[in-house]
Amino acid sequence: MDVSIIIINYNTTEMMRQCLQSVIDHTKQNSYELIIVDNASSDRSIENLQSDFEQATFIFNERNEGFGRANNKGINIAKGKYVFLLNSDTWLLNDAVSIFWEFMEGPMGQNAGCCGGDLLKPNGEKQVSYGNFPSLAEAFSVLGFYHLYKSYFRQHISSGVVNTDDQVKAVDYICGADMFIRKLVLDRTGAFDPDFFLYFEETELSYRIKKAGFKSFLLPLARIVHLEGASQTNQLNFDKIKIYTRSRSLYFRKCYGRFHEFSMNVIYYLKAMAQYLVSFGKTEYLKTARIVRTQDKL
Image 1 (cartoon, rainbow, N blue to C red):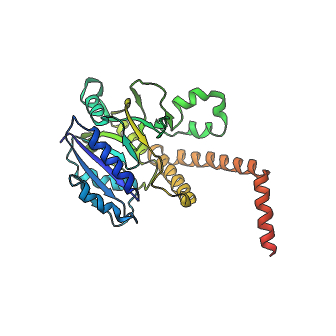
Image 2: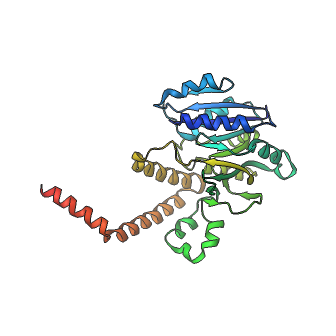
Image 3: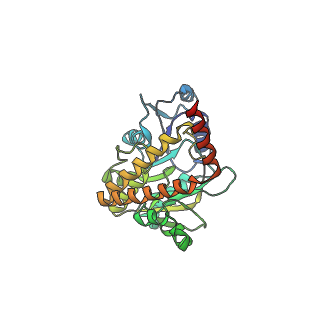
């Protein structure tokens, strides 16, 4: 088996159907298996896909395991030389699998642990496809100092980078929406850290891959549409912020130690306070404050 394609579903059945069909339509050069892991979706129509995609293996979790832990279940049963972790809210525009395979099997990919492609919005506009490892330099920069070195910040410091050319390049990490990983590397480094529920899990795994002596590469020739955040609801914004903040703190602790974690938290706290103070005098804030005071009187 060349590649094990693992896709996590959480209430994205119709998008999953489109994603699976794009894989089948475009993947012509390599042998592959499809592994679908459902994270206890409330929309149980995912079960209908079993009859439409009989070649796929389905795993049904009893609860939402998050991104990393769900992928680990697929990785545990994967038979491929490579695992291709693909989001359910994506679809392939070309034979990305063969592009990844040929690169990893070729001379330039011999020291590669992971690669990924160019992520696009449905209208063709490019979006974040890779990034630099989160750092105190980034935390410091987002206080406003990045305005002094915008170009350098975008390319060498920012943890989210939009690709601007067609050159193959070594990067710190690939976006979790389309990670093509050598299985032997995962056997050495371990898969996703189960302490992460959502966010930063692919970054932490990529950090371990780099520490083990392997590189990650962006291959712009592979083109994939990504409907970012499609499995998350707008009603959970506050919960998402809490999960994101916890995962960011966890990443810094695991990768750099508690001093870096503490320093990062202080910097982002100062940023949040500054944003609060700036918004304090805005018209919308004052309107809200007047409404609250009126309700208190009632």
